[in-house]
Length: 436
Image (tube, rainbow, N blue to C red; front, top):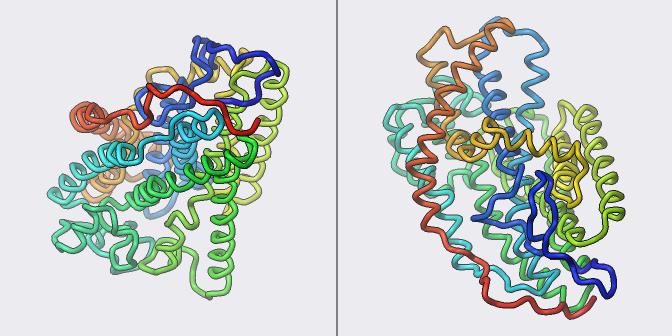
């Protein structure tokens, strides 16, 4: 996984990870199968934050609530960026191994099959269940944000809209964007990345024959970062000059919303995770001192991202600042030779609350919008106007959503994932890189 070993010294195959466990440091972060300490916990924290953020936004009473809740909500909703960054980190890992150590590249048909199994069974079940009980976004008619008004909810009876949601193409058209589960637009961005990633990985493998492996591994995510940042800037310029409200363009039935929610704009957030896995992989077998320097730099990046979040509140660039924060966080957590405080952070992330919520996070994400709208439509007591009421509302949403998430993981996701196969051939020995 690294070409940065000291000259003449083969990399030690065993290292202590951030949770204090001995791991094979020559292995890349896995796309599927093997767990990485702390990663489920990060997913769990992100899932909880998004659920609480959406519940805070949609269950606030008619007279509003304390300003602190609104400020907290704006920060919590940025946790979707962590999901995107984690996808880039985990899925690009096997390609980094192929680029930097000459290992076999992932088998693309198996890779696509595995991710269809990861996405579609749970999504299909929740979509059908929500359509039957009548808590789906059935129409994009009405004011923005779509999915923010009771009149837009009901049984999803239009066959074209239902099929568009079933096959996760609703986000490609203004007439169907945000229909169905409301939050599943992000799945389209994720699935598009699944399709784009093999091309980026093959580009890196090709570049590794001509450039140093580290450079070859970094260039594909940097290319994605630059291209998507240009698209994000173009979108922001369009919004500024359109004379229309940001809410209408971001979350309305418009082509601008299709553009904004696509990988063309959101892909830079995924690229931050891809860059992080390259940096972690490059340090898998280097000495403590060099790793310590990189970890300090990662802490600086993390803190700069946090300052950026505070400085960009109320603008679209807060997502980019969050992406920078995620880059720093992933490198801090996953570099080898962790100091004690990082090991303590990983142990917190490995606690049952975060780890189990992380395992259930996909089903939790699919169900949480349905549960929130069930309470808003049918349970008046779920709305809040005070901090105490807010706490009660959050418990009312979180408990059933976590139960549904656990059941979804146990009976739908886990059986589907048992049908997955390794997309990286294990029998092929590592071959030396063409260039040091």
